[in-house]
Length: 110
Length: 112
Image (cartoon, rainbow over all chains, first blue to last red; front, side, top):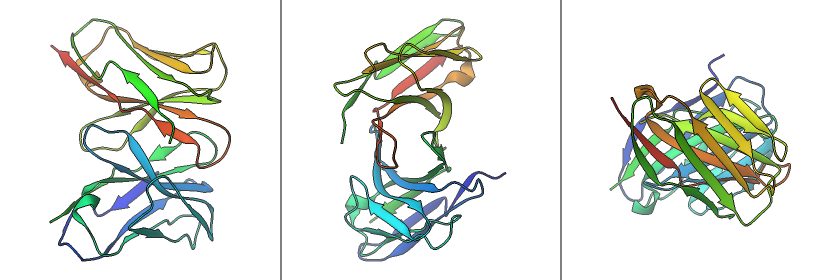
């Protein structure tokens, strides 16, 4: 099992550009999550999904969108990138309470 | 979101020493999780705790679910250089996808 995989590993965006961060899990987990991690901070939940076709907002959803068309994939879309979205983004999945994380995407918006 | 206070924020220890860190909250949690994050990597689950008072070990790591359900502790015995990293606690308020909250982490440095 690869677990949770994320692409790309790094990305630099100009202000106003858009992009999609990809996340795939092969553990057949129902729940998937997107977090952002800012320097010296814990993880903040952006969006989550309890199953294919069902998504909901987390603590910091503004400026982001998600979709969940399959159990395996949970892409995160950034529209009109802003410097405040410079962060490290982690995707995670779980069946119950124990969440398993991907390696992260480091995004810089300049 | 819920506030989890993790302490200490950072630790510098000699190789071979034992380490203790803790996480406290004003809320009662059903589950406590401890993660380790290496530089440039995602958090890796170390230990999961599901019952008040529970003491669980994973090799040199031991974690406890506090009796009040508002705190948890992680101990590392006989530290080695590869223990370096950031340790995060996470508390699950109740069953459901939007109820896991993370502490701000303890950065551990092990001096050989």
